[in-house]
Length: 505
Image 1 (cartoon, rainbow, N blue to C red):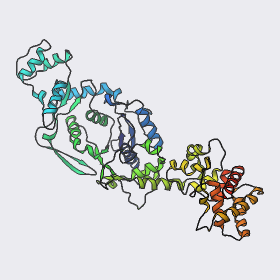
Image 2 (image 1 turned 180 degrees about the vertical axis):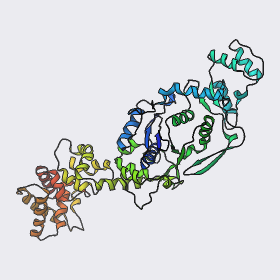
Image 3 (image 1 turned 90 degrees about the vertical axis):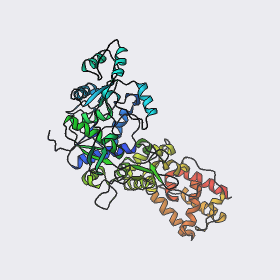
Image 4 (image 1 turned 45 degrees about the horizontal axis):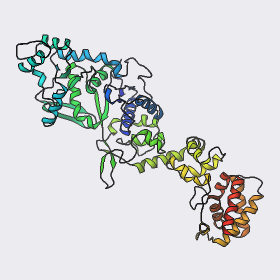
């Protein structure tokens, strides 16, 4: 394969729900690949067996499919570099770790869990002290005597290591980090980053259960899968030298690094901190449950850390792929603004065809109308200009489900010039006219009621306010009197108007 082909990978751990940060990473990886005619790969990193959550892999598949991030390779679609689940690649990593041991670039560490925990508690910073890098004689002797062996000499010789391994002594393989100097790497967003090598712990490559660590598996898999661009959050900046030193140890080409800015949330006091549940919904599924549209979420998340060259905000996924560029990614933290997301959502709702809106709104409308028929076209006409989140629909329309118990004082409205007396007059005339209306449609209702107001010599509002109050039982409604009557239907509408008249008599 031509290495000049851009290849990115989304490599989530199936340890829970899809956080907006994970989704943004996946989105940017997809956009980087597709904007350059490249390939987007899905790889499941399940090496942390203790944190695996049942069903989390399916959540990943479902989320990517729902947002439209179609991967070119992955566990469910195959590809030339499979398997794409790390646990299924378990036997692949050991030879690479042992290669580094043979080359003197890594070593076996036999430190017990208890020793490491004690070290963590006692040593400032809790880092590993490289104890097994050059084991002293007494430590080697004690370890071997435990397994019925003896040794002379101050270092752990190859044959004794072999004997320990054959005895089944638990161990990990650690990389020998340089003890002096510094390691510099380049990130396309943050520029050159330098870390002093003395700050780097001899990282574990292979755990005692035989599984590779996240860092080690990442490097091996990225190399074997010919990944050209590694995209991740800026919280991984300081660990990147560990990756680079592994690439260097193997003599492999280092990928292009793209580290993304943090996503922050607004606190009550006006300050910001890393986005968490205390700020609001942070998972993709949670945002959907709150009535946000997939398209709006994707569009908004794309702008959390990326600035398009042209002065616009609304993009389809295809338009994002056509316009995305790495040089538009910002270093500065992005603030997740729920009000801004609401604006995006409203824009997408208003731009929908009425038929599409009714389809996505159907579960919410069902809560109101149940199995009763309703005029979808009229509903769409009153809801689309007003709905910001789909979850608002049941509350906005609750009066259709059941007429509220409302006071007669609702009929009094200064602007419409209505009082209890003329409201009764308006309702009586409206009922008499509507009972004879041959066709119950929005157009016929509109024409009949406006004509009635003209004949009675009153302003439209003077007639329509009491009609709407009687029909809805609330003072604020989506849509006016005609729309509400049309949706209610002839029988229910007239029943409610008569009840309203009874309140005034």
